[in-house]
Length: 409
Ligand code: ASP
Ligand code: MG
Image (tube, rainbow, N blue to C red; front, side, top):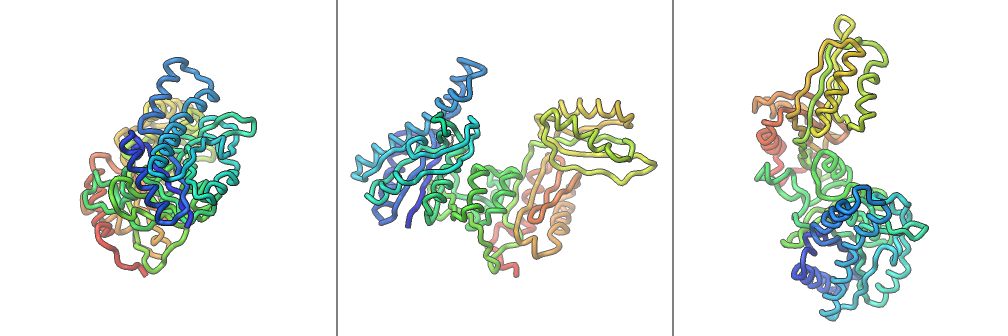
C-alpha cells in the first residue's frame, strides 16, 4: 500500500526527534509499504521567522514572507533525509517547487491547483522515499507560496489524493481526536472513527486538531485520513467519508469555545431591513457573527441578540450603539463572558430527541441556555462561561461518551 505520512512540528522539533521519525519511517518502508513523508517546520520555527520579518519590516512584502516561511519546512525535509540515509534508507528531499505543488498566487494562503507527481512516482518506483516540505508550493510564475498556518496537513492530504495513496497519516502530539477536550473532561476518550462532516463541525466549533482544508479534501478525494501520536502507540482516529450505520453512536463528540461575547439591541422597529441595518456595520468592521436570535415582535418593536468573538466585543458594542441611535432603539446590552458548547454526531439525522436530552442535562446542572443554533448534525448552545466545565461534563455523561457506545440503530 502507498502511505503518505506527515509529521508535525513537535515531532520534528530537534535532532533527537527527527531521529525517531526516521526510525518510524524506516520501519514503515521496511514493512514493504511505499512511502512518501511530509514534514512541518520545527515547532516554533514559523513563528520565529514571522517575528523576525516583522521586526525588520512591519509591512513585509508577502512574496518575501512566503520565501522566508517556506524555509522552515525545507530544513526539516533535508534533515530527515540525512537521518534516513544514515539508516541506509534511500530518500530524497523535495521543496514545494521541486515536486512541484502548483498553487494560485495568493501569498500566505495559497490554494493548490495541481500536483505533478511524475518525479515522486519515479522515486517510489525505485524504492526511494520522497520527503516533501509541507506548507508550500509555487505559482505559475515561479514564486514560492505558502498554504496558510497549519498548511502541512493540506500538503499531505493533497499529495495522498494526487498519488492515490491508500491512507494519509498525520502524526502529531495528541493521540487522536477526542470526544471532548481532556483538559476539561478527564473521562474523554480517543474516537476511533469519525466522519469528515463531523470532523468539520467539531473543528468549526472549537476543536483544533487539523487544518480545516485538509479535512475538506478527505471528502473531495475520498482519502482515508488518520490522526495519531508520534510519541505514543495507538491507532488514533480514522476520518472517513463513509458512515458505518450499524456502529454509529448518537453523538460523536463535544466541542467548545470560551471565546465568545453576546450583544443585544432592544426595542428596535419591527420592520423589513432592520436586521440588515444592525448587522451591516458589524460586517463592515470585519466582525464575524455566529449565533443570531430575534425575538417575536411586541408593540411593533423587537430585540436582536447575536454572538461575536470576544476580541471583537468592544468594537461590536460601539457599532451597535451607533445603530441604536439611528434606529431609535431602546437600549443596547452586552456580555463578554459567553461560552459556546456544541454536540456533534451524524446519528442526529436519524434520531429525534437529542436536543431535549441536551437541554435537560444542562437544566439538571442549573445552567441557563441563552441561545441555541443547530445544523443537521450539530446543536450549539451559548451559556455563561463560568458554567463551561460543568456543562461539558454533564453532556459527556448524558451522551455516554466515556463508554464504548452501543449501536444507535
Ligand atoms: N509550519 C507551518 C505552521 O506552523 C505549517 C505547519 O506546521 O503545518 O503553520
Ligand atoms: Mg499542525
